[in-house]
Image (cartoon, rainbow, N blue to C red):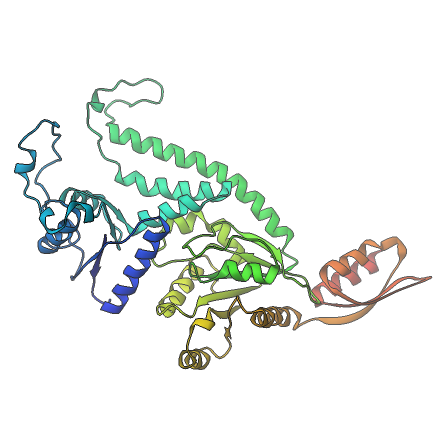
Length: 441
């Protein structure tokens, strides 16, 4: 069951698009959406998100009472015969087999709002942040991704802990137990904070290794695929690098960073990296936790911004991606738009895209000729400043021959008494480094 509120500045089309996206998030988690409840309000109701009337309508889908009970939740015995009589229910609107057992809210909720909605609907309630965290947790495969997601999840859970009841205040102390005057919920929060600290220490160690790998690639040409989740970044990663990266029609199918060389190679070697996708209202703690992963984009020479041209909301998705890139310090990195899935777009829409984005590439990862166009554009970008030079490398310095092959394109190679004669096409920096090595020998 989806719940959304149309706030000021949001029109009906934007709300519908946002709920469609929430429905795709639900599908990624394996849920089926049975209905939607929406309301136009000046702000979210501080108690239960929506007004009393809409709360009753929502409860009609879930079998709840539609009313937030006054006072704390009361424990009931299974033999309490009057339990169903004390709280009137709105369940009559839906047969039991058609009721929703889960309510997904397209907003971030406070702990009290989530608790009140659960008490009024009788169903589990998850806000947008909780849904995204659940997907990240399910799709995290590498150790680094699992640590990043767990830190973000615990940071989300910590302020939402509350007393569990059942006599916990009478529990004893001991090592790691409660201190004087410390409640059970305070103990839980302390344990969460300690666990986050442990995870961050472990993550910092992995991040240092990742930073070392990026430093080794600093002298190489790098392009990062960025964009909204499910825009087709992994499909382009596979097409451009001939690698077997995971490609699924799911949101956030890729969480880790994969780096592969552009295939086939041209005059220069280009490394392509696939990054985690973005989404509207991406939790700040997730952005912070994945900062080391997103550094791959910030430190790239070029960003290939992949956009799903067939999605009616692609304009807002571009805005979301640009905001996240600015947040991680990648706003000034050179960027090229790649409008993907153009085979699903009609001629009029293609003409409009070409007019609005004259420098963009309108392509589809499923068409080999389009893959060739994108590959050519990447090589043109990295070869635009190349220079050619003739070098004579003594046989005692053959390591420089290997360096010339690794960081440039050897147009011609010959051998004589003086050594290896190379005609090299490379960047000015690479040529300067090779000349300096020859001069110092």
